Image (cartoon, rainbow, N blue to C red; front, side):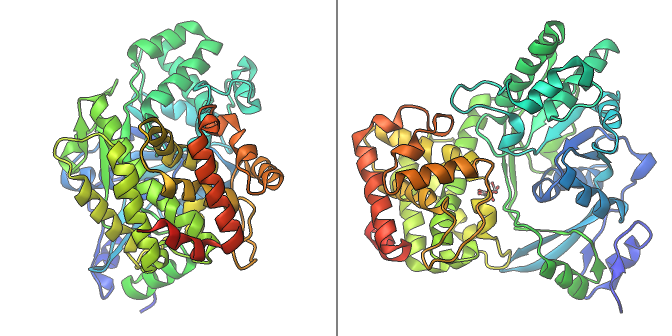
Length: 502
Ligand code: CS2
């Protein structure tokens, strides 16, 4: 039987048709539910994470007032608008592990607005009384956050454009939309919606608050004051490894599950979300579907720190050296015993000693789970995905551990090896001379500095917005990273790596 096109009409047939059973939503959708969440940046991660939690709330807990309206701000979001639009906003999540492959259709995204088509519609939707939460996965660069000064990049042309009152009805940036919608809610006597960042950044909520308040102060201090006093910006740790969907994933879904889906999501079984209980206009009972909703902001920050330094830091350790050594997928790198030992030892000897203890969390178990998750061969997690946008990642995932290790005179050779591998990676040529794409908003600057510096890290380290001032002055660090850069340049990754493994 040919696969069935995913849409409302075919749902019951889909659940019965394939060889393997497919779970489908049996809850009401469309006009029968309220869209309490407006989500900006509907990509793979959102569809494997928040939208899945909301799907479970709708399916198992009868929640009807927190369906999601997806929003795309960027021209490339047209592809998501078309994919979801062609299938009643339904999509399939395929969970893969050694235990097998499970498919389930998610229906929590109820509608989708593509801002370039109609910016006013997005503002009106956020300002609507039914909207209680605006959630974000807009990546680090969407926050216009200067890592060095910790301030809003208010001189950025996009922010300047949105600060001009003439553009209030047609903003470009997330902050332009949030501000316009909040100003409207203020005028209408509504509460501010909660702005819920689901991006993988330390203090994601606090940064969002600071950026939006700074933006609002430059527009209208009265609105800024109202946001400061009544707004809510929960901090959160989010986690689920979600590779990019490949053409093969669609074929397998059609062949094994009988579903024709123009953009399914492949992910791992594991998912975690720890969020601070700070909501200005109500929230769904997230804890009923396994979300850790915690009162204490400090606890959230500690979870974030563990995750960013151990999971994402190790991903970087597999990503940049792995790409230079010619690997394509995370699990392939893990199959190399020297690499997996290296990652384990980096976590255990260099990162773990810097982390706070969290009551109820066993760090060794956490590290073991990570080793298993990285080794999952079935999700085919691509190294280019891990390496994407490094200038927003390494300064969060690797450099803070180095800075703290300097402070306590702890070991940091392996962390320096990873930073050195990234410095080599930016040139875009691997150890066998093959070129690859370096996808990074700062690519040109990084490449110019890498060329000028050779195996001397000083040029790259002079980029203050990434590295600040402190690292450059530390002799032990400069010596260690220079040695790693020289070794990698001379012998390549695979010959150098054993020197970093005990
Ligand atoms: C990855 C993350 O892009 C990266 O660097 O480490 O996308 C990672 O897969 C997620 O944070 C997992 O939650």
